[in-house]
Image (cartoon, rainbow, N blue to C red; front, side):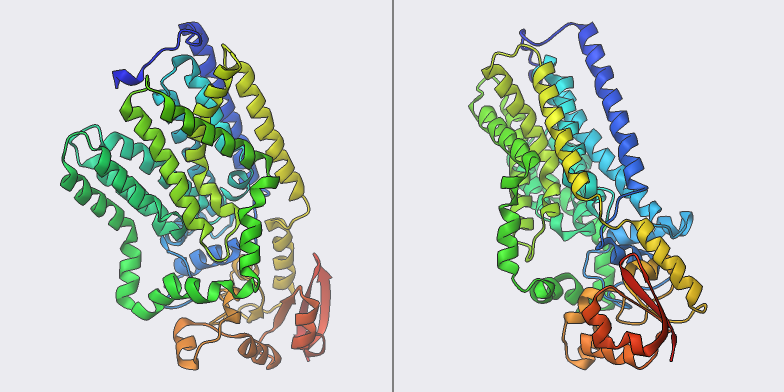
Amino acid sequence: MAQCLLVDSSSSGNAETRGASHLWLYGVLLLYAAVFLVYAETWAFTGDEGYHLLAAQLIAAGRTPYIDFCFPQTPLNAYWNAGWMRLLGANWRVPHLLAALFTIGAVLLTADYVLRRFPVRGWRAAGALVAALGIGLNGMVFVYGPLQAYGICLFGLAAGFRLAVRAVDGDRWLPSAGAGFCAGVAAASSLLSAAAAPVLLLWMLFYNRVGRRRKTFVAFALGVSLPFAPVFWLFARGPRQAWFNLFRYHAFFRRLYWPETTRHDLEILTSWIDNGQALILGLLALGGLLYVVRQSAWPHALKAEFYLCAWLAAALSAEVGRAHPTFARYFLLTVPFLAILAVAGLFALSRAFEASRPLWPVLAVAVLFALGLGRTLYERRDLDTWSTYQRLAAKVDRVTPPNAPIFAVEQLYFLTRRTPPAGYELSYTHLVNLPPAEAALMHILNQAAVKRQVQSGMFATAYGCDDEEIADYGLKTLYKQHVDLEGCTIFWDRR
């Protein structure tokens, strides 16, 4: 450990200067956390989170994913949210708060790593600030960190990295088990983060400095298995349903809503060209990796930790890039590791321009990151938020008798706390066509079945936003009354 406490005399500073730097770091982190929590509890929203929250609500009510309804995700985060919603109430702000706290935790873990391990003392606080802002102000992290399973995945990946670094230094089994557990938490919450587990394990086995590789392997394997206990239990209860939700749906049916999936994926994979934040972070990370490779003065063990960041970023990028279709927000899982490498890149750049102190390089990068986040939020200014759906839900409740079935989207089922009819828990599955017996087992209704049920008059109230769908279902002739609200239409009072 002492080898890592290298000092660059040109930038080390005295104790008073370092103390002031630490105060600035903690102040910025507190400000970021406060702003992020306010955003999470007010404006954070994406349409896809509706079925995640509905799944947690159904679990809290005693229903079982895969067995009682379709939920093509690993279920740990849904069970986690369900437990807290039972305690604090079935409100969307509860999962948002939990995910936001996890995201803040990932930022703190990453910044703390740089503060402790970066080999140039005078750049530690500055580097920690760069890492924190590189993650916290990243547009995708800020927007999606409070949503779905992204927050818990970021925290699990950052914590797994920290524990893996500690595991190779000693003979204790607990850090290895902890690294496996954290990687397992991430993967059991979203399979998008599954690639991190084998990378962490292989890195620990290769760089293990005490030679207890079998002990490391067993401890990691046990740790990574624990968060998958719900998956094992669900496989035991319904192997066909679990296999469909975790594998078949993603392999064969996920692309149905994106007919030109390959074109879509190519557009996403090249979208970084138009994204200033991605360019800056990526170029600094690449420069940082090249700088670390060429440093003969840095301890080999420390360089290996930066290599681990590169391997994790590469493996996660390869995994989410192969998701068919993929989305830009999936790549936020790589940001903590790119941010660590970017610190080395910014340090190398400052040395190349003979900047003796980190103030101006750090300030320049911070401003660019902040401007990038501002642009992202500005572009999302007209999108729906939960307040939009709360107004819609209030109207649905006013015109619908208690316990009467409604034809709606996941967000409205969640907000009105009305249990959706079987097959309506995930609207994406309506394009899936399966043999009738299998569709019933998987709780899936295709579009033809949905149309028959709507036109049969089984729903007291119907909600629609697509004019073609409204016309195809004949909603205007099925119901006597309707109102246009928030760009959509609510129908009630059946003829």
